[in-house]
Amino acid sequence: MTLPNDSGKGTGKGKKIAAGVGGAVAVLAALGAIGASNQPSTVGRDAPLLAENNPLSGANLVQVELTFARDPITRGSTQTIIVSARDDDGAVSGATITGRITYAGGTERTFGGATDAAGQFTYSWLIGGNSNPGNFLVVANISHEGQNIEKYTSFTVTEAP
Image (cartoon, rainbow, N blue to C red; front, side, top):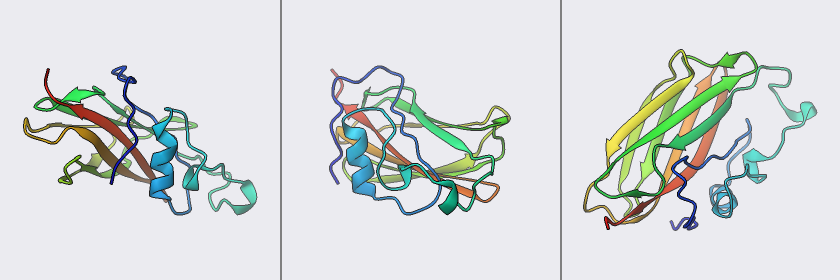
């Protein structure tokens, strides 16, 4: 799968996309929506939920943000994914996180854990020095008190200078 190229956006702050709760994700549409900007997508499950068709209407909905320590990053470097979960009451601790990173060459790596008292989960790993440069896809599933949120984003791996 080829992801959009976000060249020139390497601010080091990571990419962010917002996702709502419920419904199926149109993976290709969502990825296309993040290609042009870091603004929340309005495609698939990211579309606003109306109270009349939202089974969690009135619930304290969890908002999730995925960021990276570096984007772009050179192969052979350690990357860190930060998952942050909040709701109307503040940080969400104990949310279950499962995820998958798909390298540009197709290799997959999984991660998992739970958010801490600050509502954060971090995962760090070494990107191999021989990994194919390109876009690496990150899919994270966050579950908390009956809410299941699925987030998609990507970061760019480059060759060392």
